[in-house]
Length: 139
Image (tube, rainbow, N blue to C red; front, top):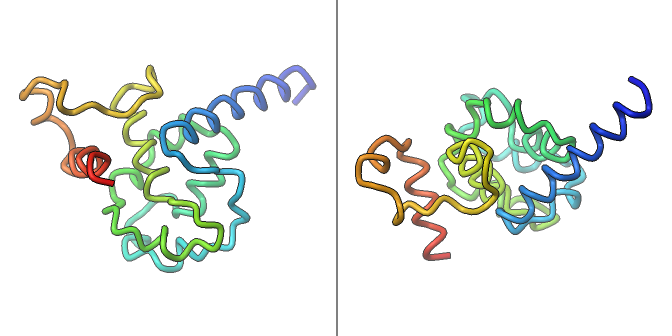
């Protein structure tokens, strides 16, 4: 990898980190990879990327891989990861932000506004996307 490629990769990674941080309201770079979130996750056995790996991949700007992962749809938003994080990073919100980005085809960095969608479009959403979008209204 030459210096130009490295600078471009770092720049794109920084932009993705900024986007995820803006939507989730979390500081990704505070994570030091202790793994407590993954150790306590009741859905970890069904994930292709563990919660701590989600954070690390987001830190590295690996948007394409994250948005294609099964994990963002397997997470049930039980908030166990949030309660176990010694740095108080709300990992569930980070995963929600990835869902929203995936549903918006990566085009927008704002939250999914389900109340602005047609009933037909809402019926096509994965149930967890509806749940996490509604929770944003109450938290």
